[in-house]
Amino acid sequence: MDGRAVPIILDVDTGIDDALALALAVASPRVDLVTVTTLAGNVDVERTTTNTLAVLDWLGASSVPVHRGASRPLVRPHQDAAFVHGTDGLGNAELPISDRALGPTRGPAEIVRLANLRPGAMTLICVGPLTNLAIALNVEPRLPDLIDRVIVMGGAFSVPGNVTPAAEFNIYVDPEAAAQVFAAPFKQLIAIGLDVTQQVVLPRSMWEATTGATEAAPTLVSRICRRSFVERDLDAVQLHDPLALAVAFDPMLVGCIPAQVSVAIEGEERGRTRVVGPGSVAVASTVDAERFMRLFTEALALPGV
Ligand code: BDR
Ligand code: CA
Image 1: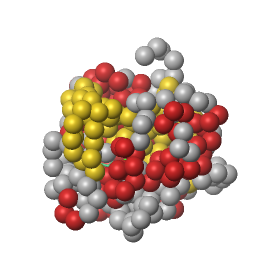
Image 2 (image 1 turned 30 degrees about the horizontal axis):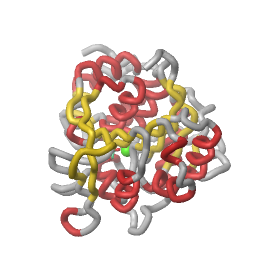
Image 3 (image 1 turned 60 degrees about the vertical axis):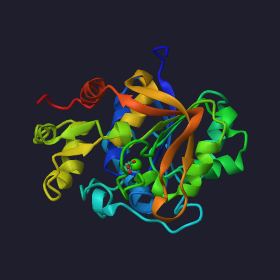
Image 4 (image 1 turned 135 degrees about the horizontal axis):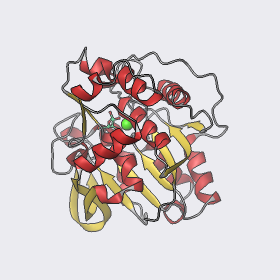
């Protein structure tokens, strides 16, 4: 990749680790955050949208447009992850509420609009359920030719799932959407699943070191991760979505296998992602965790531990 900033549409269900992906996008000179689209996932779409606006404003990025997207999966009721992310989706961090207006178009329509406006230029990163992208694909069947790359945080290929033994959350919530996305002829579709994201974590010591921080990104980390470390008593917060974001400007962070991916739709297997043969999806199977952590801590100016 050349040194230019990558133009990115970031599709989020903010969410603690989504907020950290937003922070990395805002902080990295290698990212041109063109727009952010939201949808129901970790919590309902009203909250993921409110959270996204609040996080961007907190980070001084209130000029980045936010477009509200899907309020539920394609064909089934929405199931959230408030247990993990808190009832407000941000670890009950109580960030100031943003008063700015949303973008005038809905999330999927904005993806289609930008893809047509800048054909072959945009990288779309989806770090929530794949509903917005599936809708966009149905509205604009030429989308795979118009988008340069799609990076998906989703799937559990060689490791157990995190919502059922079979499934990772983003795929489980909307398996019909995921099946459509993995079957679409994108020029580059990269799947960043739990196989690699569970290897990149923000340890308790790093969170503790943010106590008393005054800069925007470290204070965001301090506030949104508090519940995970204090009330949930976790040792670490997994950095699923920030890793997917980082792959956009540092693809060598992960090693991939070229695969055809199937998605199970129903029953106990619902949401299971499988490699069923060679194909055009790049499924991440290895990660340089040290390199990612260096990049992440430097970009967010997190205190050394
Ligand atoms: C994914 O699910 C969500 O809870 C996280 O934000 C991440 O996108 C991990 O399975
Ligand atoms: Ca997410």
